[in-house]
Each structure stands twice: as C-alpha cells, then as structure tokens.
Image (tube, rainbow, N blue to C red; front, side):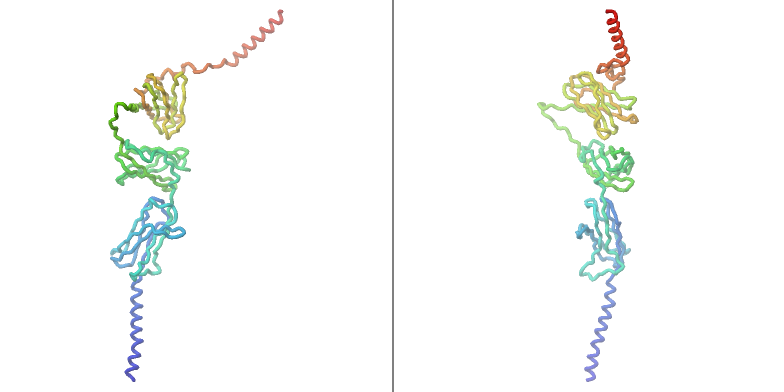
Length: 376
C-alpha cells in the first residue's frame, strides 16, 4: 500500500516539471521586430522600409505592401533574411500606385512557432500623394530623335515662380538637371533638353511645395527616307535663317517662293509676331500662338520673293528667332528694311482729310453763298 501511494504522488511532480519546461521555452520563441517607413510619400519615389529585430541570423521574414482603403489588398511581398547585424531594408516601387492610403506590415509566419513581443512595431501606414494631374504637357509624348527632347507645357496654379525639372535617360543616368527653369504667369514652361539616344526619358517636376510628379516621354529613331518612285512628287525640305529680333529692331527675312503653297513659321520661346504683304500688297499681321508655339502662315507661291517681318509682341522681349519655310527655294536674312516695311511706304488705305481743313472749306462755302444772295 505504501508503494502505491508513492507512485501516484509522483505523477503530479512530473506534470509540474513539464509545465515548468514549457514556461521556459515559450518566451524564448518571442522576438522583437520594429519597422519604420515614411508616413507620406509622393508617387514615383521609392518606398524605403527599414527594420531592426532580435531574431537570430538566418531567419527569413516577409515584408508586405498593402493597399489599405476600406479593405486590405496585398500588392507586393518581399522576403528578407536576417543578417548578423540584425538590421534590414526593403524598397517598394510606387510608380504605378494611385494616390491614397497604404500600409507595410510584417505578418506573423504561421507554423514557425515565432511570435513578436508587445513592444514590436510590425505595421506602418503610408499616404501616397500625387500632384501629376497639375502638369499639362503640350509637347508630344512620343518624339523623333532630333538631338533634343522638347518639354513644353504648364503647371496649374504655379504662376511665374519657376519649376525645377530633372531628366533621367534610358540608361538611368541624369541627362539634365535638377535645374530650375522659368515659367510664365500662367505657369507655362518650355525647355529643349539635348539627348543622344532613343528610349524612355522620365522628366520629374518639383516646385516650392515639393515634388509634383514625373512624366514619361518616348524618343524613337529618326525616320530614314526610303526611295520614292519618280511618279510620286516629293516635298521640298524646310529652309531656314536665323537672326536676332526685338520690338525696336525687328528681324527681316526674304522668302523666295516656288510654284505652290509655302508654309512659313517661326521658332518658339518668345511670343513672336509675323507681318507679311498679301498678294494685293496689304500688310497682314499674325499673332495667335503665344510663346509656347511658333507663329505660322501659308503663302501661295508664284516664284516671287516675299518680305517677312518678325518681332516680339511684348516690348520688353528680345531674342534669337529662326524663320523656316517649307516649299520655298530660298530663305535669307534681309540686309536692310524691305520697301514694304519702310516708314515712307505708301499707306494701304487713303487717309481722311484733317478736320480743320474741312471746317475751313465749309466756312468758305457759307460765305460764298451769303455773298451771292446779297448781290442778287
């Protein structure tokens, strides 16, 4: 009977030992992990997530990016293996993300027996901002490789405070900037960026408020002319001439036409005005496009030479202007003021008689009538 009591009393002791061992093991499987990420980030900039942990080296954990609106939607997952220094970094691309709320999180890996201590930070909320809709691009998004990338457009509400642009080329190298360029009162901008190769160019915009957005341009190989059958007429190449122009010292060109339509147009960058004589000799004025587009006019060529006058619309502006003509046989800078634009040129319409002369004539007529009536 004594042996029986001794065996039965030993069972609770074994249970207590097992429980004590479990209590020692379970806390040993709980670790600390802390991640950090920016609370707000402009679209297009990399989302960098840094972390520290007490997990042993060699253990792998997942860092997950979620779209966090009304529900969570997993967008990307990266696995990182803990190194000896117990720190880690992962980077998520945000170029294709819409603005809104997101979160990065370290989910608990099921089936590993690993848990995280209460002081751990396993989730961060990130707001992705996007001001790209403030950018209005007016130059073509796809351009032929002519040696320059034309970047023209406007930014809503920017005014003339300027904007910083940076251009990244196809090989991920910076080909322009970061550099501030001037803007007009309406937020308009225009910049020709020298380039050497075809591919994708990313142009980013930043103002005093910070990053605005990135616009992608595609530059394709310049078209090589192919042999055209002799029965198909070919268009004459554009000819051009360049000189300086200001409001007080306009530029004068001479365009020799062929036997068909001749398209004449200026370079951009300044709000230019074109003046030219029509077939009847009356001087016509063209000013429609502003500084972002060159002015243009089409002449009906009859083999004659047409003088063209170009000057800035604003008296304070001046610059270099290039006049090009498609279908012309020659375009040169005039050595003097063409007769059409000389101050002594005959007016296109007859001027009315001065008012004092009319009053004198009417008075003389009145005296003559009175004299005749008196001597009847």
